[in-house]
View 1: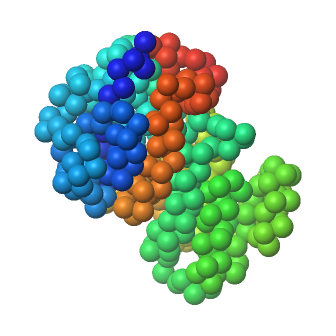
View 2: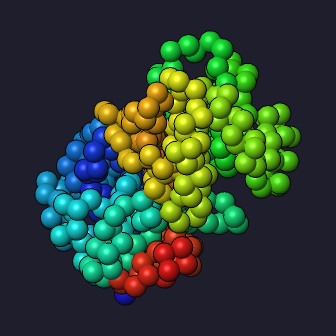
Length: 336
């Protein structure tokens, strides 16, 4: 029913400091070549380095008004979750694709249910136990976590780095640390299979337990928290008691902030104002870290989204695991 009217709308992101765009001009052409109309809100890609003329050249149609874009389009392709100012545009006719992270955004789930919207969350789409869209942004987030964290450390020469979680984010962070010639890097992970894989890549990884967690938190200058639990709220693994063990002037980079954060002090911050000061330590809690490099991140995101859009007629069978809400009804287990 919803798929008979294949008109895609790409709105300009309005979440604070979100500079990415969901689909880049070259990939718009791929959609046009597959007989799918694409409307783009004016200047939707400008912060990522893509202007209106590039979209027009590739067959896109520019809309100057957000309301018009939503009225025309049946499928809305975003980067981040709809903001409260956008709720009024969203109706039961819409399929919306985005990083929703319902567990970390108060009121969003209720709004989408009220509007009877069909929501497809990139972060819960799985194929063969891989997150094909999330993994692209996870890699960038992991790499940027250490780059951003280093900005707030006084002595960058001889530091200890601990990464909590050995998934895509943690692995990317560890590899970037090695590329930057840091050697005192430890990944804490509980999954035995992941531990074995990481060891084969010559990464220093140990099985996490309470004693090891306390030891490494006490001895680290930079701690990167990146445990992901599909679609669910992040576990507050790092209590205030553990934060109190951190060294003076150290930093905790909480990449799980999209899902509510890993520490008892975590709350979303922004790229312009990224730090929470707690006693003598810092917490970096930016929920859209990839937006610090919007051009590269937009290209990678678009590349990962586009296969699904080209195959819209098979939408529900191809990304069924990503559908969190269908016509206002919760269907993903993580939200039940």
